[in-house]
Amino acid sequence: ASAYVRDRRRFFSTGGHQHSVEVLVKDLARDTRGYFHKLAKPPQVPLVAHLVAEPNHDKTVDMLEALPASESCFYSSEKQVISIVGKCSNHVAALSEQFGFNGGSVQEVVRYFERADLPATMWEWNLYSNVKAVAGMSFVVNKDSKSLGKLLMACVFNYLATDPSDRSHLGMDGAGALVRTS
Image (cartoon, one colour):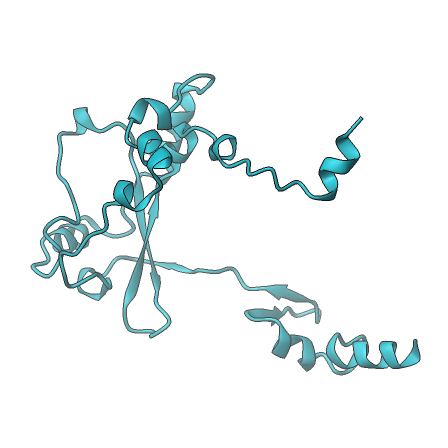
């Protein structure tokens, strides 16, 4: 038991060896009182159009073809994927307002969409009256510290989508199944 406590303290310091915790836990910072906390990640940054990392080819994967036949059949019908039962239109409007933004100035957004190097099939343009759900776009600095990564925030779609757990019950309940038997 004493060896366990000694080894535990070596990694999860209880005293003066606090640097051990900082080494073990990624993105850890110490506040002015000496307490540790995880840093908020990822920090979002304003859009700089030419810095956004995008594919430089038009290759695509047809997601319906990549799925098993039963899943492909399900996801090919919008009526099966989206459910408005019990969903509030005010929530849809609030989510659209809160998360339906482009994380940059209008000028940079226009520059982004005018980039000549974007794949031709990356974006589809439509009248707003035909749009069923609004998504937002925000940006973070990539690990290379030079380019930006794009975060698409499909919050409205996520709110309206059917519950996927209803389709994924594989019967792998383990011990939980045993305690529910009567």
